[in-house]
Image (cartoon, rainbow, N blue to C red; front, side, top):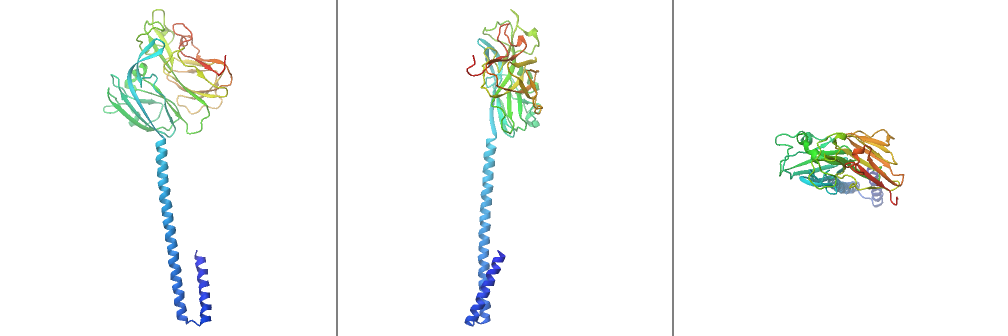
Length: 363
């Protein structure tokens, strides 16, 4: 810009000098004319600079406004709001067999909550039951004001009350939500559910399924008969298996006992991810006939080394396991426990933990 102005001035001076010589203009007048032209040039340059500064300011203000709008939109898109209501319920775990349970939103397990790493969750828990409760997400690292032990004036949700929690999720995986330790017996009454947090990356699987394994005991009630069934406090082993007149133990997946568990439909080429949580007191050796599991993570671990495969995976009590399998063997298969008392009800098959896995057009 300065070079251009200098050249312009030189041209002006030369022109004026030539003109002066041609017209015999007095030197004093010539200097005055040069000074006037210089001042006019300065005024023009100043106006140009002012206009450029105004333009820059307008662009900057627009950019800031756009950034604030994008940030607000992104923040709203990443905030997930959920409501859970604790209720006394009567739940049917198989045709004609009912369970007296504590539930979230009338369900046991409660609804699956979903998020992605970096999301903010706003969660309101209301208590419509007859007893105090509390809330905790097992495995998720959260601030103390969200996940700390309940204490006087904080964390205890009285009948008719409600509590709202807001937090950012920084981990991916499968997590269990349920009451805190001082109300943990409510978990055995059905008060639990799952939170699935996806990694902030493209998915490597095409289908996913949450599988919550549960256990219930009915005292003296034959399978298939209606009636009140008490939830199991967790009696291990075959001793909990029903006899002709003794208690019946029902193992469930997502609150249903086979054959009431819906089949899993897959298409050849699907990569299926299973989020498996064992809320019972017993190990569950899980197998999918005709396929192998790839173990992705166990109870909040980092991703396992590549190619960790098992034809059977034993899900320990309290474990949260992420498994995957490739649907590459068309047919009708069984996703089930390998323990007889976990796949039968009073000795009748199928029962308990048994899910048909069906490819389309399979015979």
